[in-house]
Length: 157
Image (tube, rainbow, N blue to C red; front, side):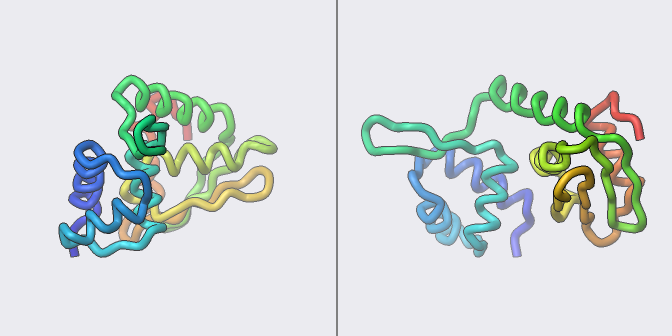
């Protein structure tokens, strides 16, 4: 099985060099290169790479990678959403709970998801003021906080 990082590099290269209008087309290209993944995994990969769709006047919509300034702007917006919404972060083992201000749990969970941290398996946003983060086996809350502080230097635990 090929690593996630190698798969992400392949997805990036394919999107840059072979404009595709559907995820099925991208999956087919990946399959030809020896990658076996589901549409849901590809969707998460596209999201973590910041891949978007935009109109191509010749033949409909195509996936594309935003330029660096677009990516940086989106990243700054997600970081601001996180900082604006979170109250505290606590953990036990590989489970992290982020308390948020009322109504901010979805934005905070989305911000964590969009940081595309390899150690995060996924997030679940509560209805109102809690986000649950599940970390990969062997990763703990202290590791998570260290990576979060690298990504968000003014983050306070």
